[in-house]
Image 1 (cartoon, rainbow, N blue to C red):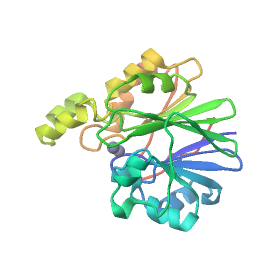
Image 2 (cartoon, rainbow, N blue to C red):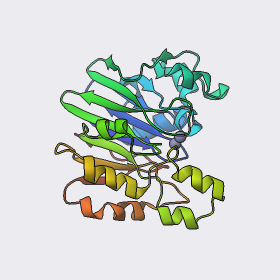
Image 3 (tube, rainbow, N blue to C red):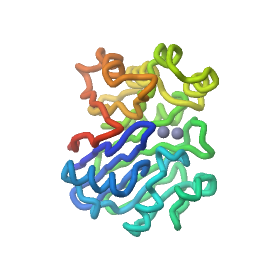
Image 4 (tube, protein in one colour):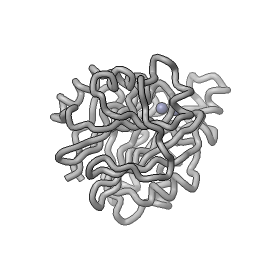
Length: 252
Ligand SMILES: [Zn+2]
Ligand SMILES: [Zn+2]
């Protein structure tokens, strides 16, 4: 059995839970320890099962809670040395384990592999997590559909996939022009349409669950992100994530 849950997803904070009966990992800790514990309790997950933490990049919405969580749990935090060295002091755990991109890491029955991607961070990576025969991707904060994203997406049975913005809403929205360009650039975020393109072109036959993730509050709306995926609804289970609340726990 594999259980996945987005405890938080969006610019307020990101935290993704992936586990089996006896152990689990968290990808990103962009909310507080207290919020993590509360949200896990709400959906019946136990923090005691979490055996390791993985941090994708230094942006605070992915790392602001990791220092305190690490202090309390005393479990390893994996992040690249470059990411660690460029993290804000208050977001930096006391200790970390250097994350080797492109190599499998084994946490009990869970295997995790980080891969590089394009985003405006110093050493950004995303993850695939393998438990038994099933592979779960955590793919947010992605500027473009690079070869790595395409390759690892194709392996996924379930994926937390960024649908950050609707292009028209971004262009018509409140952001200053330079920020609009940054979000839409190759080092920014994935739009609804880019995510749909990825699924249409590279979703494999084993792909079942797509969790629409990191949805912008200003430049997107859950209904609009869902609508973009309308044509794929027959083939996949499309679910929303939320910045303020955990999703239900999905079993794969
Ligand atoms: Zn982010
Ligand atoms: Zn980011």
